[in-house]
Image 1 (cartoon, rainbow, N blue to C red):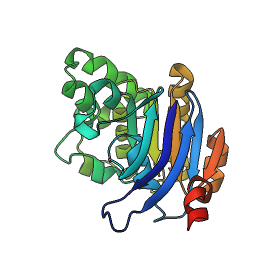
Image 2 (image 1 turned 90 degrees about the vertical axis):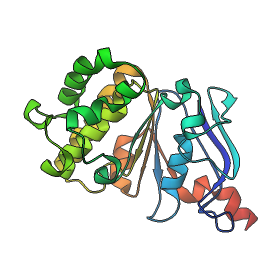
Image 3 (image 1 turned 120 degrees about the vertical axis):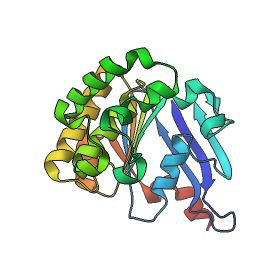
Length: 224
């Protein structure tokens, strides 16, 4: 179970962007987090993925509270999460070929022997043809680059996926392909999913349940 309990977080202690937010995702469950742009969804998603330390509140993973964040978190916790961000060009090193972009987490964790097989396997799963893999980000479309970013998020076989506005900049056909790739992975592995977005139709079709931002932060609203 992934639980966010009374999370307050932001980038300025005097003006947090998330206040007293609570949300839970069960293993194998797909939960959508729906809210308007700028409400704090992405910050909460980063907390859920252990990429941003909250000012207060607790993240509980598999029954135990998380005490360290980012690179200080134990490797087994860091690699339990795969994250896909909204803007692929901001989350991809422009110097890397797509094949190296996908393989980056494997090399960082000393699993170089898996690179060739996993890159080929995941490229096919996300719809990247072999001719695209030697290209760099400026040589492919946003949709192709986001496919590579999804493959990178899956390469370490995470138990939890965080998709933060994954398809916000993409057309309908690419969105459908990426959602299908995520669902195929979840069906094969039993991974849990937190899908963040403001597209109500997409989230309701994709997820087992959808949490609205005002529900997630209901305690904060009552206290205010």
